[in-house]
Length: 87
Figure 1 (cartoon, one colour):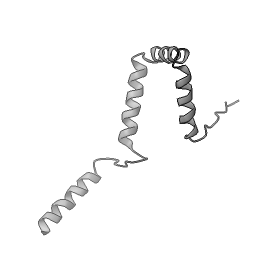
Figure 2 (cartoon, one colour):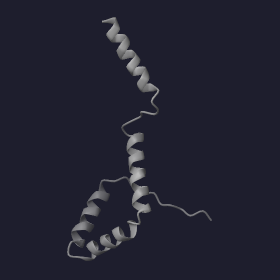
Figure 3 (spheres, helix red, strand yellow):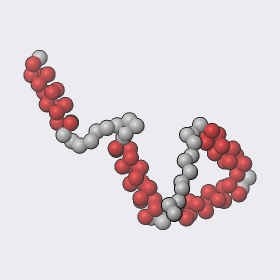
Figure 4 (cartoon, one colour):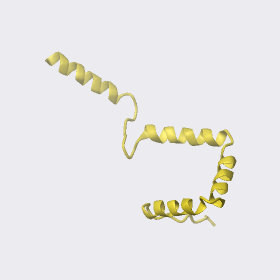
């Protein structure tokens, strides 16, 4: 049994040296995945077409439903912080 405990202990130590492993609200892997996806989306020139599609959807018959869904989502979100310009 001591050999098993030693093996488990060395596995734990190996995991500690693999780099930051904070997960949950401080999830480095999720943040990196998100950042990479945003960077790729922008780099591939997809922002303008997505914005045009969103405008089309808001101006269509589904616009009221989308606006209502946005309001419901914002009702559960933290208050937005205003961004003050540096002058």
